[in-house]
Amino acid sequence: MNRAFGRLVSLVPILFGVVLLVFLAVRAVPGDPAQIMLGERATPETLAQLRHELGLDRPVPVQFASYVGQLARGDLGRSIQSGEAVATEIAHRAGATIELSVTALAIALVVGIPLGCLAAVKRNGWVDVTASGVSLVGVSMPIFWLGLLLMLLFAATWRVLPLSGRLDLALDVAPVTGLLTVDTLLQGQREAFVDALRHLVLPACTLATVPLATLVRMTRAAMLEVLGSEHVRAARAKGVPEVLVVLRHALSNAWIPIVTVAGLQLGTLLSGAVLTETLFSWPGVGTLAVGAVFARDFPLLQGCVLVFALTFVAVNWGVDWLYGRLDPRLRSREEA
Image (tube, rainbow, N blue to C red; front, top):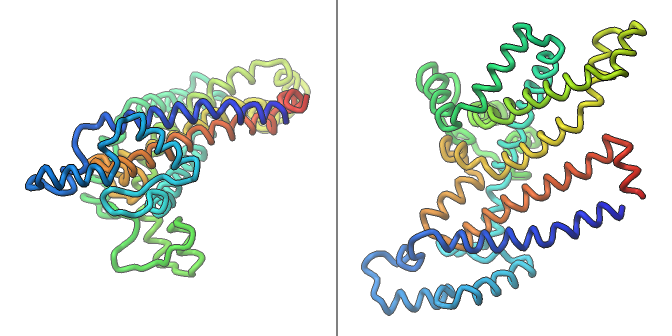
């Protein structure tokens, strides 16, 4: 308990550093938001008035102090472009990003962990060679290139999957949770559920490539280390079936590094799906951040990047907490 509280306290300077870096990085983006909003024909007087209303004419330290004060009250500010609360705009898009990222991670886990286990058990065999090749291609291949290739094959050439978006324009689903596949099931719209799944396939498979390749490599390495340990050799000497040796004695002791990688990949997916969302016109937080960059919408861009950073920090803290549930030795240290 004391260790968990200490980890929470240690997050405070990290979060402050994240806020500071986000604030400075956003203001390093070239362009004048007032000029973009008013257009090229705006007069110097109207530009000066709008900058004053937006607080852009104040010194940067004063702007940062005001921003930190807003964050302390739970206020992310208002979008310069739309005038809506930043938290509201992000909340409207968060469901799409969560749905895409969780689906991509599920694909990576379902395929990556079994493939990594098989590669370790069948070391130097054709399964191991195939798994190594898949992981190498997955890590090396750019996401945008793979996405374009999948779009060309499955959407443009074979026309078995939709090209972009989350749902066909002819279908209408009332938002409940923000997760379209869940909302369609809750409302009993079978046709919309199938269509939402079809729209989800290409972007989720594209986004799952890197975490899948990483999980294959990490699972294989962790399993090879455990399979050579004494308790596994003892289980085999006792005549325990190979399936039980792999699942009960080996995989159960290799979870720590696998969970570490899976947690890091989830944080990366939630905060780094910008390319995939932009490529497939997926209306998530990533595309919202890209639009904020082009519009020089400081508050909206700050809010998006801050949410990305906080999500990554929160996921890493959750993974650290999960260690104690998986390894009793770590749990006893926390309780001490």
